[in-house]
Amino acid sequence: MVKFYLYINIFLALWLNSLCLAETFTYEKILKLAIENSPILKAKSYDVEISSLNYKQSYANILPQISVSNRVERFENLTPTTGFITVGGQVIGGLPDEWRTAIYLTGEYYLSNWYKKFPEINYYKKLKDYSIYDCQTELKKLIKDVLDAYSILIETNIKLNYSKIILDELKEIHLLKKSMYEKGEIAYEEILKTEAEIEAILKEQTELKRQFSIALLRLSELTGKKFSLEDTFQEIELKGNFNFAEPDIETFPEFKTQLKQKEALEERLKSIKLNFLPDIILYTRYDLYGSSYYGLSGSWEDLQKTAFTAGIFINMPIFDGGRLYWEKQKAFLELKKQEERIKQVKQEKIKEIQSFYLSYTELKNTLKRYENLMKYYKKILDIAEKAYILGEKSKLEILETKKDIASIQRDMKVTENSLANLEKKLEIEINEEFSTYGEYCSYKH
Image (cartoon, rainbow, N blue to C red):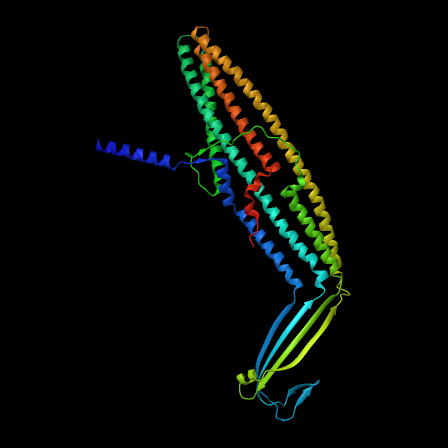
């Protein structure tokens, strides 16, 4: 007896624990988890940071380059002569052994960068803007993926719940038909038909459970969170009053991504063309030199100014085997290709949004038909129940009507879920609902 109570307590503890672990999720909560977990979105946000730093780095090209060099050496004379040995005016031997120290301060400034490098700077600026819109495009894609996955889960759950209701109705119908068969009121064939319907529902439930588990796995994949069968998922809110307005495709991140790529390619083409112009470099050098027979420190103490050089260096490309020419031609064709890509993206987005809205309109009409159908069936059920009380209708007819009502309710709920999915997609596209999560695609440096 003690063991029996112990088992009961263990069972209750486990059951209550499972209830405590169960959670309730909404579409918004799942979406937030998915955005925070997405490795692709994180990679895109790093791309935004990197492109921002590349843009800032590109400004270094128009600033002067200053460097300092130092040389410390020990000179040992290996020639027997005591006189100076020179080659081309430079002393190479005959000097006494000594320590030498030399310091060179060098400065260079590419004057040509003022007309060569600004298109390159603009190129990196366009790429920085491109990375932001590319991240927003990925964000929109992720939101729609989460929406579709969540909608599939809700739809499967609706069908599963209503299949249980319909199964209960069929079981009650089956018991009633068996009783009627025993009384000789119906043929055995009617019982077989109901049993076949029950088996069909059981088969459907098995498939729906499989689909529900797959949908849970998909959400786990997107969010990085493990869900259980005890978790509750709330339906997506259907507003039903979406006002469609013709969108401006050119404000969409998908379009802006391609547009910024085109603008970047234009700047790249300008930069390549400017490479045909000469490089003009202003340079200067300041030399310090010291030497000592006694030690390294003496050479440092003996440092003296020895030379100052300043000048202009001009480099003009004459022939490079056609490298710059073919590079320019390639950049030109890439630009033309990108222009066609922009047209393609614009056409695809217009077609996609029109498809969403047409489906949304049709489903709204379908939902109205289901609502009207439900009104009729509820009236039929009300009449049947009253007729049953008066003995004019059988209980079987009432149960059949209830089963039909459950089927209509199931289809109506599935339609509402599909309608909510399309409504959300239209809000994402037209009302830019994704911008709420825009901080994931902004640069911090």
